[in-house]
Image 1: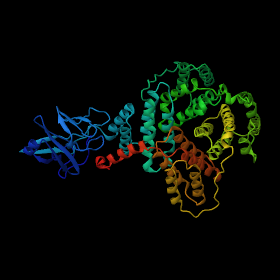
Image 2 (image 1 turned 135 degrees about the horizontal axis):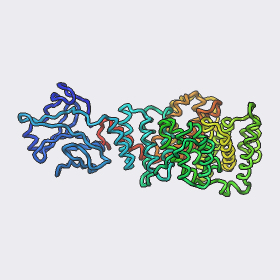
Image 3 (image 1 turned 30 degrees about the vertical axis):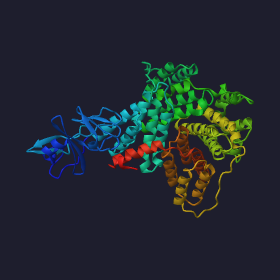
Image 4 (image 1 turned 45 degrees about the vertical axis):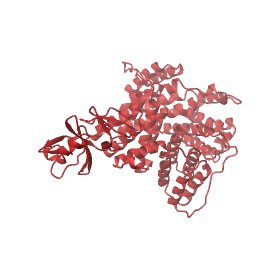
Length: 590
């Protein structure tokens, strides 16, 4: 790792790049010297009859290497005991990174160092390699430094996203899980964040991918069928049949063939259909994970579909099916009601062709009611009246937001996850309806509506949604107050009220989203909280009604208020990486 910085007298890699740094006899006598030339802090050593020069800052956390020890050609940093081969600077310890070594010569009794040698590799190549090492070894500091290094080298965000996707899908036999979902969520929210927080978001996704894969067996691909003469309908039937009997390998061969021979929309339709053959798989995670895998491909390119998409197959073949749960069959058999409606969908959609649905005034109230028959009948009537899947998914998603916004804090803390799962599932169905056209997605809407119904007790009684008619508060002050509110545990309702007042005061929603993102990324936020922010931002962007947009961020603030603060260990690691990049002396911090 070299730098392009030059001396006043020469160009990188030329003889003129050598500058005098010490008296040779003095260095022999002292054994080591610290010198500064052209902004560089150099550690000079005389060891085993030879002069050596390296960057004085340990690449791990910046400790001065002149305070280390040298023995048998090995330089050891005394802070964390990182070891370096002295002549070339290569490390024995992958978590430390290599220290830069400089060419050194003795001339007429003086020591000269080339302070601007040619690079061994361009920065993007170096940091790509370091990121891969950080993922392999699950080293947070290395991941953070690599993300910052790639950004400073003007490498587009799609590259660390691609590296994380390739690693996460290869090195986890059980396939797609929370790490890659977080990775995809962070990719989705990058445009909503402050510039300073976008690197934090990439770091957040990548460190969760690394953690998710640690100690896991790798996944081995199944190939596509050699034939290309298979219709989309047949591939879909084969894939669904394999998923039905929990046959991973067979399902993967069908999916790989679909990826190789069909258009992306057709592949998505196959996955969405299989993900709705059974009800609310794995508490809604399975459908959301399928959708997130497709969204990640939007960022890194469809050419990676054969690597990314097969990783979701275990989420379909191994998933718990909600029709197997008592909550979906007792005291009312919701599964029977749903499967009966599924059988009617074809005729209902045909009846609604070329019709335009006008939403009844009380439609949301029905979706939030305590009568599953009335809810399903209202949805059935809407389909017959021409409601598109996207329109109905929008209304069911909004009902999910209401459940979070009105969640009663007297419930058990774990019940936040229950309303959260319903929201992220219904958000995924709504996003899927924008991507692909399929009658099967109506099944996702109906199942999502029943999950909203099952969550009704968590709004008993419903917490009032904060409303503020007008406010002359300074929006910037409110955003700072919101951050302070997250510094104390349990400020659920206060957080929601501040967001409501921010809207009332005419604050810019984009600034509010940046503040919510900033609050999230400084915490050791868990999987569900990271998901919740992404889903809430998506719901905000999807809505046209201003009150509904406001509700999306109120519900998010309440959810975050319930889960903050945390220890903020991950943020501390990121700050260390950032300070090292800026050349600060970490070891001198209090």
